[in-house]
Length: 415
Image (cartoon, rainbow, N blue to C red; front, top):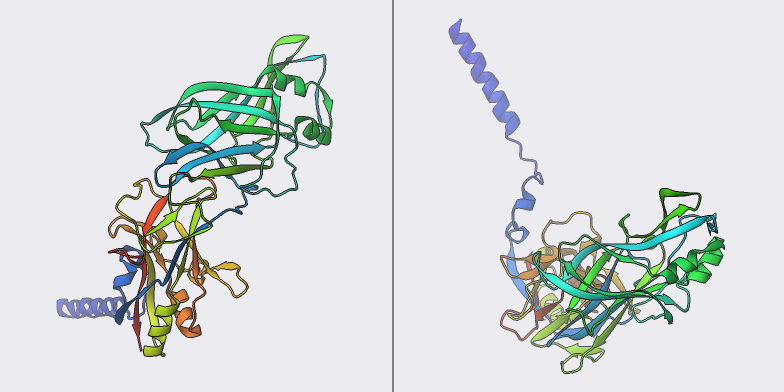
């Protein structure tokens, strides 16, 4: 009996072993391994023959969930200024009434922040915020770009004061002047209110403020304008009415002063240095046409197993880096379209244009794009942009084609 039981257990163990020995491939653990090490084949490199920094001067800034305000300057990029223009709108279409039966106690604008630049969690800043009424509307159904401006009503200053702020402040608030309360008095339809209010301009005065850029989260519920009021016959009540700011139309204007720097032209060849600058600054244009043609002639039937674009930074590039790089390819008509690897649903986390601290460079998987270049035999170029270029001030300097550790595409192939 014991012998038969032993045989049964051995047979059962064999069944489990055969069930566990499965030759089917799985994706388990792939994200734990560097994708450049899991392919068999020959390794090669494509070096850029076109490398340029190109101005990003027609940047749409309205309709986005983030904005930025402030001033900053350095020797490499010059001076940068960002100003916010925004509607102040009603929460619904029924209109608003603050007649003689009600008293407006105060109006407070609150902005939810999404970061301060430069600095870290221990940084503090003395900032002079100024908020003025616009002399012309920010229209609900209009699109606005980084070069657009709206005139202000110079006599209507809703807020102007210097305060100390901390990089950990998640909310900043501004108590509006009595002039703002006056605009609310009376009975207004939705259209009348927008016409009467016009909108606001928010800026940080450079003359008596620390260099700082503040990112605003328009999508946060706490980004709003709150009216505190009570009724004359019941002064003990404290009531609130919320006006839309974050959910209204808004845009940012970016101004750059490149005096004393090597920047300023619409495009700059970058043999040693290439500039990523956000907020209407510079994008990168790369081309590999000569390298693609030479490789295709030598290996016409090559199959690309893995390819990645490497963007090493120069030694003097800021350690407070942008979060991610995006890539688009130039089409025959001059327009750009995201490369196939970025719109493909299967990506390796961590090598999608983010910074790799081990290899000290930005890395982006471009396998499908490289295969397409070799198949077509031509390269119209790549346009590289910062993912957060509309609302974050982090910038970077990339090593050009003639640098010791240059920008390049490394790939693995077989034929």
